[in-house]
Length: 99
Image (tube, rainbow, N blue to C red; front, side, top):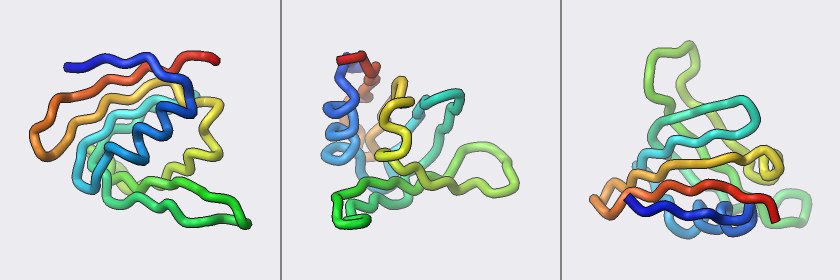
């Protein structure tokens, strides 16, 4: 497993560039821990600015197992994530450091 310490901007860029649909992701932000399969990545513009949202199907049994994470909204709360690529590439653990 590869371990990285990244700033929040670099961590979000990692997610944009490296996480693909059907990869597994464990992510911690604020007081939330979510783990599941990535269903979609949305890099559309919102209010004239580039945005980044990810749709994740959570592991486990919950009432609504699918969540959408807006990385512009949680950027200051992002703590860490663990990326498990579906294609068998090396797992990556990212810890977000303050700038």
